[in-house]
Image 1 (cartoon, one colour):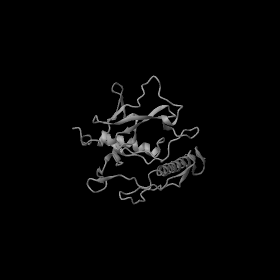
Image 2: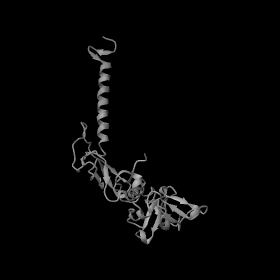
Image 3: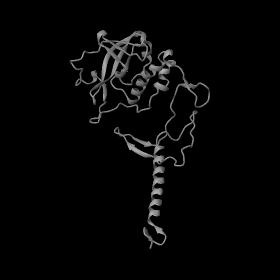
Image 4: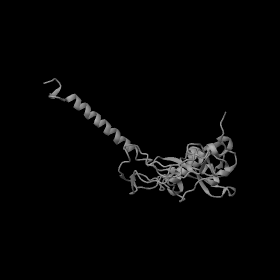
Length: 258
């Protein structure tokens, strides 16, 4: 009997190698199928679907129970993203030019994810995480810091758009998330949210400066359904609006530097 064999032509090394190759091919197919859970089947620019999913195909749906009690499947049918833009050359793959207000076009820096249209909730108790101070008397601004409520709010053009009306906090992480701005009559006279990370507090002038948008552009900031809650989808749309302003607020910002 040959050394390394169990008998005759039965070679242990060959069997192990063959088993490894089969296992590896199966692993590659499994991983490829799992990668097709998000974003497939592919869709053309006109919204029609295509069967281009490779040799591995699309896996059977898995079902996930969310903390809210809802059950979602993956993969699942999702409507095409709505982008207010037109192809600059008229065929797929060319740059897109935003239609209307580019800050709400869902394009480039103003793009947002279609998150659930429900508030993010605390792990214990299920209460909304992000609320204005007026909604929970258990939280307040530190006495060591000046109270920013009442500060003037300016855009990138130095024009005052309104007054800082309220502060929204994250009750799970104990930090300020948004500033609520009461706009003046010339700017639609409504309240809008400004992400705290997009604002610069200038203490010496009692002013909040938001240099990503002009004062007039505050009027079109996406709103909230509730006066004391903000949903995940609303958060993404609000943040995308100000992010879009870094490129689209003025024509000069969208032009090359050189």
